[in-house]
Amino acid sequence: MDEYQDIGPEEYALISAIAGRSLDDPDLQLSLFVVGDDDQNIYAFAGASIRFIRQFEADYRARPQFLIENYRSTGHIIAAANAVIAPAADRMKAGHDIAIDRRRSKAPPGGDMAALDPVAQGRVQVLDCRAGDVAQAMAAVDELVRLSRLDPEWSWSRAAIIARDWRRLASVRPMPKRLVSRWRWQTRACPASGACARCSSSLTHCAAKIRVCWPSVI
Image (tube, rainbow, N blue to C red):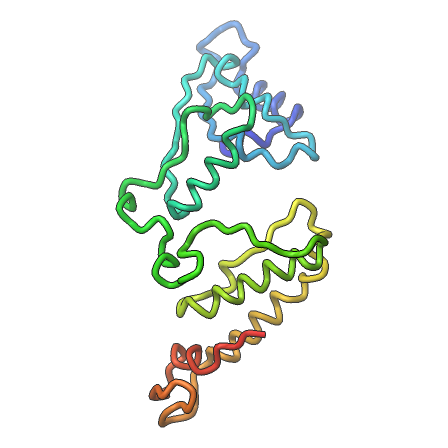
């Protein structure tokens, strides 16, 4: 069973009944294998409680295994995430920091952006901006636009702005469609031929060169 940290009292009772936890005959009880992370509980507002995953070991006489290799994020992102979550009390993974997977252990900690971004070099940044939802949301959008101009393989489908309350993003919610629409227009195959006056590149129906010639996104 996956995402066990997100179950509530009703799911807990159902799982216990299916597993036969209350049965006296151990031969009638089912083996139960669950995956979860108490650091990732985000459904407390819907009744979910990390109490259930934290007591799973006692409930089922289970033996925990800690999966600490991260296969997605860069070294800088993993280090920042470990630093942010470390002060949380009563974590199950206390003392088991997340680490980059062994296959990527020698990769630049900033990932591809280490070479592409002369400013942050792939580090996690805290942006300096005015107080207020609009100013903060626009600062995030501006930073994404800056990064999009640096990465020739940029895809807006891989970008996201997250807030504690979705209403705080009301001022920028229309922006993604505009950005994606404009980006698609700019990266379409160029019907022209010859050289571009801005970058002196040969335009032979190459979408990558259109990104160079027309860098403005908004």
